[in-house]
Length: 462
Image (cartoon, rainbow, N blue to C red; front, side, top):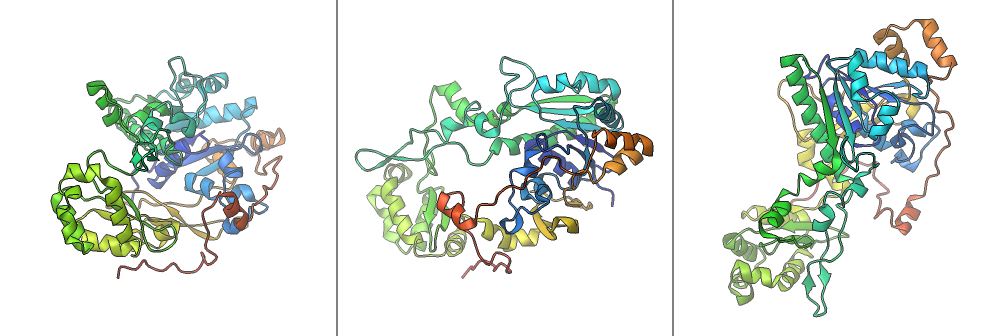
């Protein structure tokens, strides 16, 4: 079967998360994605060297080949090592761009200009090039040269003003929180990755129709604003700031995360109207609660959420989260368990959908056969999947330099002799591994399972 992007070549200059993940998706779709690596430790993609997680919490001698984050973000790619401080390596890169379709990069604008790798220069060697430049603040405006990470971006795209926990007021009741919070992980990276994929697909269609390339100037802080449109509009129309309310809702109650049987086990419940509220009361074996004056209509339920949450929590806390979900969903009340890592890996629906896909790693890495998250969609008539694991450092140097670019053996030898390319990570130092018990003490990890390699049991639905 022909994959959707079969025949498309991507040069991936990017690092860390957003654009590498975009490249991984393009590889799943069949594109030949060439990651431009480096064999110098001080310049290598930090997900190769700093992030982990490592199998059995052991980095190992080839730790830069074993990190789970790097493997997830770079699956299916080829690796060529180029020291871009070298004029010879820069020329090789330009040659590679000249025979490619797409370039991904996420450096600040001044970096790409300094290396002569900005769109204007690369378009000169590939007129119909499609290039994604992913920066924090775009290639124009007063903040254009600011560096950025997704966590630091959140205040600039306003999400901190919307995210926050409830506070306890002087009367003991909960009130909208006063301290802004970050979302959690680097959420804007995911948004930027998916946005870039959409822009690349649109640009490929445009090029097929017109023969012209495209420069995609992707500013991550603008992508961040794009998913809080309701709050922005509310202020534009009404001058009203959205409250920070934790897991609660502006008008619906009960609405939140409730504790269940077991350690750190939770379920989400969100009845939307009076009918679903009455159904919840019946499932809890408290039919009279529906007529309680404190909860008789949506406004009263919302006003008395503290009392209501205490009642619902008292009911859920003695029950398994899947038991609560099934009981409520069977009577039409929206509900779902809060899944942790173990739950996700053992969930029968994820398994039935084939969401976790496997890759067989080079024996030198010691990784063996591992599972990775795939995509939130499927395509009929195509074998879209993780095509292979992430590449080992420089493992495709010979293929890229010789088969794709046509360099002679003597030319390749000269590049290696000048250290413009290489396969061993120079200056590498094995990172220390903090024991899991100590990670729990430090608060880095909530808990861990000793038997995580054992078959994971299916969740109970009794």
